[in-house]
Length: 157
Image (cartoon, rainbow, N blue to C red; front, side):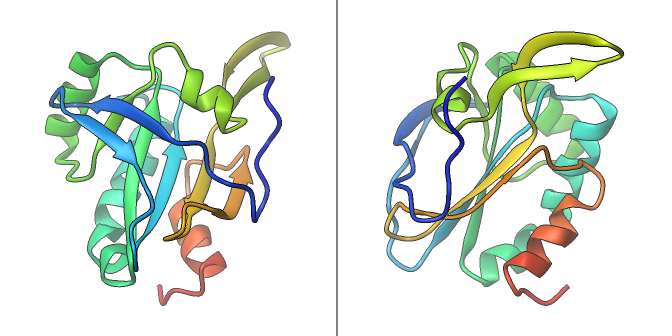
């Protein structure tokens, strides 16, 4: 398991395909921060709740200088169906080999119903305009996470 990122770390660069098959690259953007959130599987109840919360907060997040990227190990086709069904207007990126999740410390040991296995750890990393980690949150809860993140970023609810 990769080490978890902490505030001040350089965010690992990446390029992944979005739900339309287009390449999306994380790059420093003057005046804009990027919320990179990792979720286990598109179209599952918790991941749908979290994605819809980001969708519903997107305009105010963008107005505050934050863009949103959702990353899961799902293939592009599944992401396209998820984005269409839930009217998601921010990029959903496919990390099928979970290399980006590993680089961000969002892939590792999980326990569920008494079984231990490797998988995606629901995580959110906020990358500042210079490409550095501003906030790193791991093992977040799907429900209420966006509201908590907004509080942590001192944004009006």
